[in-house]
Image 1 (tube, helix red, strand yellow):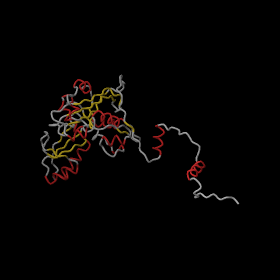
Image 2: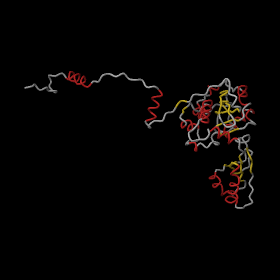
Image 3: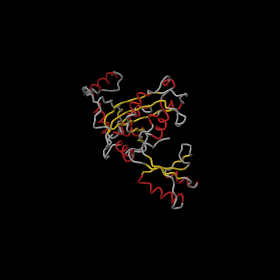
Image 4: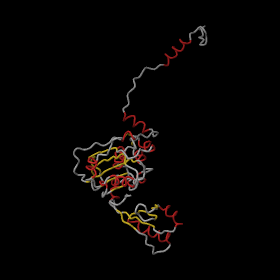
Length: 326
């Protein structure tokens, strides 16, 4: 009769049992095959459970710009001590010069400048939290006007992601920025039709598949340039081509002067803004529309706001040389 093996017998060492069991289960060692970065990205993307963001790499300055891109553009961004261009100051400016053609195709980066400026007051703590710029960083610093002039003077178009903010600050800072054509990449591009869920630069960068070091002027400039240049499936043109075309069209600013006070909520809901008259504009509600929308907007004002067909609110035609000023 065969002898029965008792696993739980105190006569059998438990460590020996574990070793013998492990030896039966062990598989031959297999050397791991290293996976390339491209393979890892592809593998994670194909699962459908991951979305990969790539760190944005700034474009290099071209030593010999291609002649088929004859026009000169500027992407700029500012960091300031506050929101009011009449009393607050620029503490940093970033500028990227690039070339493009009449169809809105971007060519080469031709120059880059980023500089800090010490303001006349201490930088507010909330601005430091937002930008990372401290009083120590700007101590003794000033923006190089010679370097800035070399980039700005020959430019055909200046672009900011919130030109209504940046243009007044830039023009208060230097006459270099006056008399230039400006475009706003935030308001003059239909981002939603391009599949973007918001207009903030951080949203645009993320949805374009990139990430970057935000809230420093030159980093934001490079990020904006990449989003503007990006070709998207289903879009007939780039965002920059759309922006450049929009900059070539005039806009109409309509001032709903002397509109009834009880109509203010209706005007606000339609997109009108209030001007208190301190900026040189009429004290009234106002809106900007394209030439094609002028007649419809006047009909709305006459029928819904003023209540009589002969109302003739003031209008002002604006080009890219006039728009986004203080």
